[in-house]
Amino acid sequence: MTDAKQPLLIKRYASRRLYNTETSDYVTLEDIARVIREGREVQIVDLKSGDDLTRQYLLQIIAEHESKGENVLPINVLTDLVRSYTTSAQSVVPQFLASSFEMLREGQSKMMENMNAMNPMAAMPGFEAMRAQQEAFLKAMTGGWTGGAGTGPDGEGGGDDLNEIKRQLAELQDKLSRMNG
Image 1 (cartoon, one colour):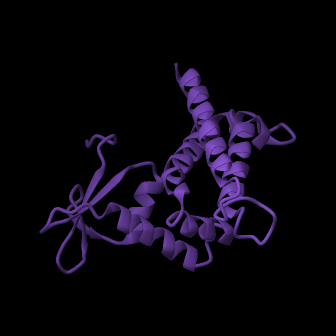
Image 2: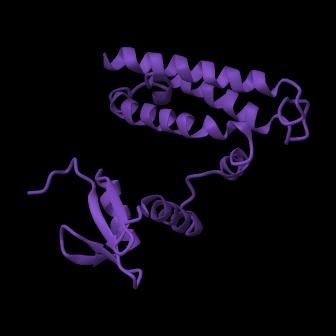
């Protein structure tokens, strides 16, 4: 039996076909998506060069699901992600997203325990901190672009919002450390 902690190695051949090294057969993107949904990590590498192609294929899986109408990412989030590639927020976005998803994963079991409550999301550990963090992030990302009187790229206080996000991320990491320790 294979170790589920090890990522499933998928090799991409020159023909662009994807080969599952554990089952010795060819797989599709949907097969890979199913493995991921079942909780297994994957690593996709180019057979000839050895380059790691995992990110490229994961983005392709997301794009295919979004184009089929299985929308998980709202337009405003996608827009903010595009904007983050050209702003100083670029350095904060990956950490913010990773922290948010980590909180979601950790809170899922607590959420299931509290399903009888009026608002099960509010019972999720760290929910209020995550909500406040997301509001500050979106405010920082959209402040100068929405046409409103916000702050942002126009240079009026955009750094304060970024500092606030960094402060909230540090608080969140501290809370997570205390929960795990």
